[in-house]
Image 1 (spheres, helix red, strand yellow):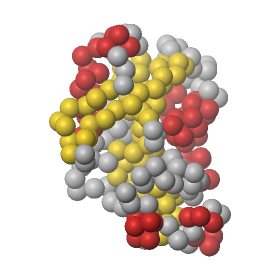
Image 2 (cartoon, helix red, strand yellow):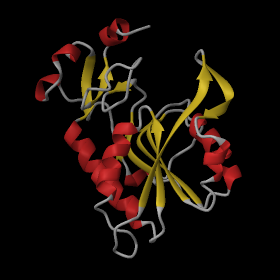
Image 3 (spheres, rainbow, N blue to C red):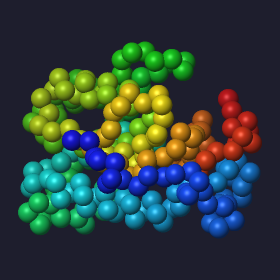
Image 4 (cartoon, one colour):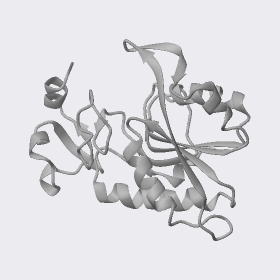
Length: 220
């Protein structure tokens, strides 16, 4: 069941717009980001809470926690670290298996209408009867995740849930809302905490709004 909006943190641009002078920003990015939307410490606290919520909803059965690469890997790493310390419905630690998948739905900036998944058919069939938790960095329009879930539904997986650090508030959304959301963010191009712009900014700890200077500087 999708997470209710009252359970996530709604990042409103006017209220969550911290000056770059208030936090540590790498020198090489000082002119490339406009403002800090979510400081690193707040990200970490929110992930710790998400880990508690997620783990508390499972029984003692093993969960396959699957990272959607590339952008999801930092969120995935921190979420799993906190989940290892959290307790399930029975007040016990949760058995976890780790997996990774690359998903592609665009070629030359145009949607193909289908999703290409890096897992082989055998790897997908191995998920039969298991509990799967997909970990994503950001849900933008939601189209790619919806198509991925449609594909996974063919493999008799016991349960499939999605945890996304960010949910973008965009008019282009198809309406899809994941089971777990960290923050709802404005319709801006956000970078940092492994969210990239042409593979740049993955080394920035905070989640920031990219500046026009940054867009031009790192455009391909």
